Length: 252
Image (cartoon, rainbow, N blue to C red; front, side, top):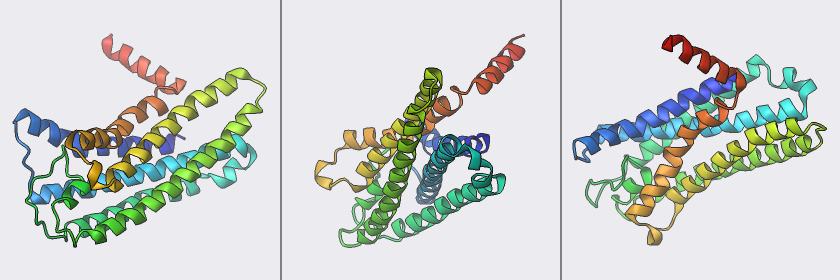
């Protein structure tokens, strides 16, 4: 669990650092400028980190499924080697996905100017600037990626359905409450991320508006990386005790 939490924490930190600092600096200096190379780098790192994070969340749902539903087989199914391989697969898949999207997006000719109407370089906003007959390649790549995302989400939901069935068979109400209080927020955040990300990337242009695009982008790019530490760390008693001890040591 702590190994996957470390990976998730690094990815959350990376996601926030990719978008918010530049947006805050632009707001402070009252500008919206970003270089072409900077925009490409932002797209690459954001897609890389957000994709890897979603895959890590998928792996974590499998880890919890095995721990609760198949505890006697946990050591053989989710050993240290298997954990390292699953984490490497998540990071590697995110990297390949980022290379594919960045290369496809920035190979398109921009015929509608160079002003991205968003607080970071978002692929759907860049596609609005491309020629109408040239962006279909990236749309195909987005649909391909969305199919994988939906598949991972279905896997997460099925895993938690099995977990909830096992939890409901527990004789201890305290154990049921602990499992539900940990699993339900995770499922809620994953659902928020998947629904808003798919809506942001695949919504028809007819229902697009600057305010709606801003809210949807904020919900999938900022909210999940921000609340994940609260869900996975602050609910863990050992981490709470360590944090309290560190605060008191520094205060004294």
